Length: 406
Ligand SMILES: Cc1cc2nc3c(=O)[nH]c(=O)nc-3n(C[C@H](O)[C@H](O)[C@H](O)COP(=O)(O)OP(=O)(O)OC[C@H]3O[C@@H](n4cnc5c(N)ncnc54)[C@H](O)[C@@H]3O)c2cc1C
Image (tube, rainbow, N blue to C red; front, top):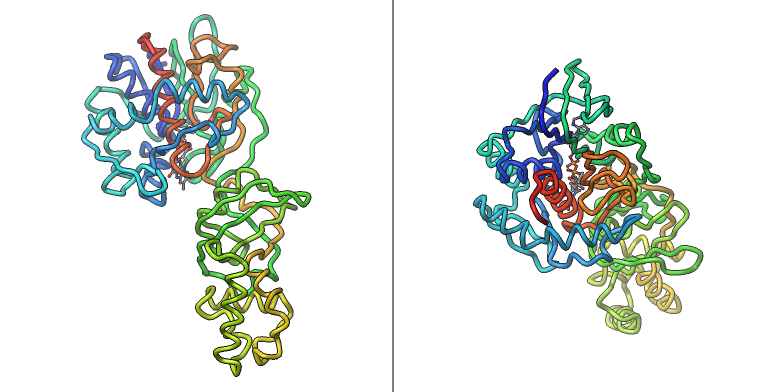
């Protein structure tokens, strides 16, 4: 059995930052960081479409969900974005924000962020053991005893669980962290996939596969708007994906309706006028040409179909239908039938109850057990919020372990 002062399970964003903080505090030699994958930070290297959206200029609470928003706020205020970026800058990285406030490395390569952290970790002498999955942990006396799938056994005085959630299990996050947390008596709140593509009923999206549009979308439940977003909507063979869809996905459920406005910058009256102008300027056109230069041609055909109009008809014959067609372009509804699930999700909603952790992420049930990152029931919107939570929570927990002031 190997003995360490502190063990961190999971070398993702949170675990790497916890290990770095301990290393920076001069405790590197007493720490073992364990990762089941052959490489550290595999998920981190895939974030932001491979570009690494590490944080956001607007970190207000409205972008997060948790059973304990006070903890979220406290953590994000005690290790703030500026500190994160200063630390990354001290490692030699350059970061900048795009027009939506999303912060990326200047190289636009997420893997470069992982490398920055890995290099520093090695420099600080923190041991990283990859290809080692921890399958059981218990506390006896003042020590934690851990067993790995390889048969290896470990003992440590302080344990940090940084195993991530259940989203995108191909990156190593198979949800095993929840079992470890439960074995210490922690409650895991209901888990659901978030920041995930949505399945819809299929007839209204026929012919739209591959189309990408900038839209405004609203999520409707029981006749009321629940939330909305503007951005890309990408049509697929199962439903809808894209930035705007990810933004509404935290509150979307099967049975909800999504209303798509294909022309968010054009008032209904202006759209109707454009359609009438088309009729005036070229009355011999076919119905299928009505939406040319207005919406994507495949979308135009879908709108006509939805209004029961044959595209081969003369445009003059459907003059009376123009208001209905304009309305359909501004309010194209799709019924949601579910999401693509954890396999495709970027983040997990729910997790170890944040109410069971103190302000430094230490368990209120088991002394010297810390739980950080996505494993906790904290999830953020699309845009750098989840990585900031992972970095901040890992850093603060390790700060408490190192005994430094926060
Ligand atoms: C495709 C994709 C893109 C994303 N893009 C963004 C983005 O641009 N911005 C953003 O803010 N968020 C993004 N996210 C979400 C973000 O990556 C996560 O919320 C964040 O990485 C969570 O950090 P973590 O350290 O808690 O967990 P992870 O980064 O998931 O790390 C957990 C680690 O623990 C290891 N592990 C698990 N169980 C064990 C065990 N029993 N023994 C040993 N090791 C174990 C796993 O292999 C994994 O490496 C994205 C997610 C995905 C899937």
